[in-house]
Amino acid sequence: MSYPKIKFAINKSLDKRMTYEFLKDGTKAGLNFAEGVLKIHPDLKIAQRLQGKEKISAINKYVDKYYDENSNSLLLAKSTFQKEWDVYEKNFFQAAEGVFGRISWPKGQYKGFISIIPSGPRFIGTKTWQTPYLTPQYFKAQVIHEVLHFQFFNLVNKLKISDQLTEDQLWHLSEIFNDIVQREPEFEKIQGYKKNIGYPDHISIHKKYLSIWQRSKNAKLFILNAMKEIRKDF
Ligand SMILES: [Zn+2]
Image (cartoon, rainbow, N blue to C red):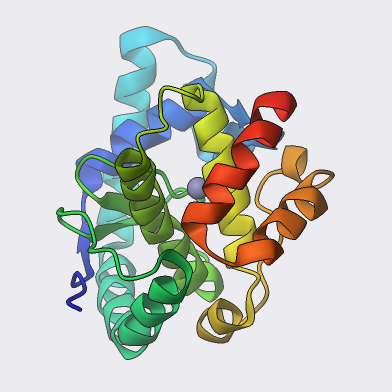
């Protein structure tokens, strides 16, 4: 089976746009993204108090300056991440095949953009995402997390179940699925550690979904069996 080739790149304009987005709508499932951004970039607190065009221009100015001052370390992160990921890429796709079965990977760019913000948004349409460069210890787990999402939503499309769950329910299910899979030993080995539950709101229900997973350890059966619970929980 052939696997996608993952590449890392720099994308300053995406960093500007996402910094704005995360500062604008801060919270999801109990996790405060805006707080995370401001903790690493306290100088953005001034921008956070502004509105509209003034806010956008203050953020853009900050990101431009940050890129100017840190261009060497951003480029270094890009090449270091690439080198490190290349070592584990095959192991990851084989482990993913164990979970999803032999279904081909959806077409797309498979590109991770080095990012100065601490969150990693993913773009299902293009198969691209952002990878925070200030927390290299979590980088492999983060890449695994976003790429698992691509195959998860690809499978959901194949199963034709998206009309049976709301977009929000599907999102919760995708996150709970990753929490479970990324704590399995073959993924733990690649990541270098056992991942914590991603969102505070999912901690108390994790066990219930884990036991559904353990019945089959198969993504397709897990999705089908967990749908009823997701509709009750969200
Ligand atoms: Zn996610």
